[in-house]
Length: 179
Image (cartoon, rainbow, N blue to C red; front, side, top):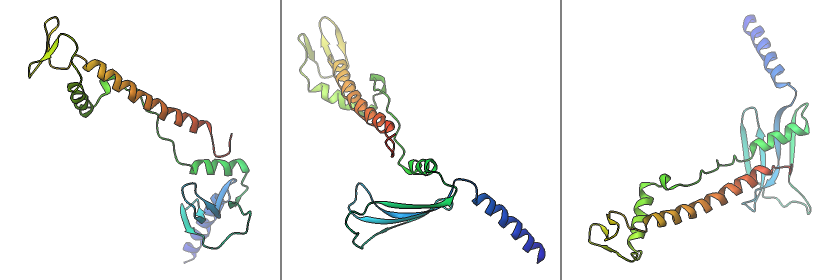
């Protein structure tokens, strides 16, 4: 029994020593609103155990009340709290690569073939039921304007990707604390 008692005291001391490391956050509690919700919530969090409690706060707040959090820990600095909060923010998605005609999926190619079949044929071309035929250029399986249609599609996709990547770049440049 005394062996267990001394082991518990020794192990307990190691645990306390680890807990008392400078910058340890033990508890976070407060009230806040989320940008996509009009409710006020109480939040309680124990970072070491990753326990989180989030409940709707039903009582009215005094006028002028703002979001408030209380951090409890050992030798916590403002910079450590900011880093911890920044780490809680959602991770940004990866930037998308530019599209090329080689990155088209089979489904996109089929969709573009259907779109091409609706396009008017250029001067000197006709469709014989299985091939596109031109007296000057011979016959081919794809619409003569298929490459142009693919190019327009790739350009449209790349504009969407550019806007997406710009939003990610803008979000990377901003932090929760405006620095």
